[in-house]
Amino acid sequence: MYVTDCLCGGTGRRGRLKICCSQERAGSIPARGTIRILLDQYLEVVLSKTIALTGDRPTGKLHLGHFVGSLKTRVDLQHTHDQYIMIADTQALTDYFENPQLVVDNIVEVLSDYLAVGIDPELSTIFIQSQVPALCELTMYYMNLVTVARLERNPTVKAELAQKDFGKSIPAGFLCYPVSQTSDITAFKAEVVPVGEDQLPMIEQANEIVRRFNRIYNTQCLKEITAHLGETKRLAGIDGKAKASKSLNNAIFLCDSPEIIKEKVFAMFTDPDHLKVSDPGKIEGNVVFQYLDAFYPDAKEISALKTQYQKGGLGDTVIKSLLNDVLQHLLQPIREKRAELKRENLLDLCFDGTKKAKSVAEKTLYEVKSSIGIDFFEKCNFYQRNH
Ligand code: ATP
Ligand code: MG
Image (cartoon, rainbow, N blue to C red; front, side, top):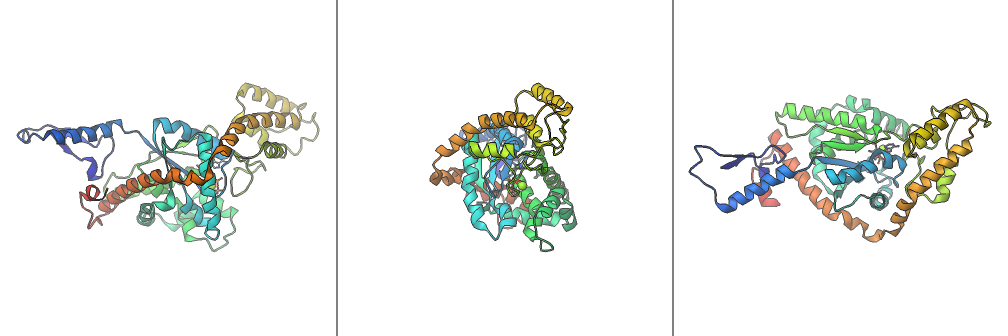
């Protein structure tokens, strides 16, 4: 009995471990301790769950767009998947490099939002991107596999560049952040990434890099990735813009007070031509209805209200009151849980997660370097010696 392709060789994923019996080796029966180790490794592989990874830029507090686009899915996935959640401070610095304190301060805000919605650090590995240097090293190797023109064509990058006023002075780090995102995902062999629709071009670009890497270096060491979209793929901004976003400050935040929530709901963009209650109103582009679709539990009721609104005879105040009620109900427990957290100890919650993330990412980095052929001093038993 012997094992090929074992975990310490750096290929430790489901199906890669083979325990075999052969004529030639029949004479060399392994010691009891060895069998025990082999069985432990076998169980680790058989019982391993699919890996999921997501992250948020610590550029502000999290909002309802995050909630429906990604956070809700993460709360479910932490029970079924091996889930990594990354606080993407390195990525946030690509456009906030002149204001690092904003990024630093928001790490605790993002962590508070995670805990408040039910992400559990015992079930999910929460880590801080800047503390995992292997991610930067991976980015360096992946950058060779993508052209500047392709990065400039990335629709998410294009949309974000249009929002920012870099002019012709686009930071190279910002242009390359899709590559760094590829490192974040592949470092953990994540196959599932719960994201909002705005991130789909990122996943497509990451898969291009994965395929190119595997082809050029004749390996299967990187996994292709599937985006896992939330029920609401993209929540609009309260101002009618296509996406609620921290940077645009056009969102309802998970920690907003009841008064602010009401104020924001009543200021929401509806149909500018719907002046009198009796006027027929438009649903398309009407943010209140988009939010009701996302948060109101009874879809039939909303459908009847839409019909009435289109015909005329339903005022904006009625639909806004309905939305305000449903959002107050949703956000009250989240806000209360958030207020109870002891903020001074929060960072400690991702210490163990960051340690684990560091070790896993280093292992992938080793595989990547050995696929390229630059694993000069790190040959096979590197992990036994260092971990
Ligand atoms: P920033 O303005 O700093 O880019 P953001 O509000 O876009 O912040 P991110 O940290 O970039 O938030 O996004 C984190 C995750 O939340 C991503 O998966 C993204 O797709 C999802 N997300 C963010 N905003 C929305 C939204 N309005 N609708 C659905 N998903 C969203
Ligand atoms: Mg964003």
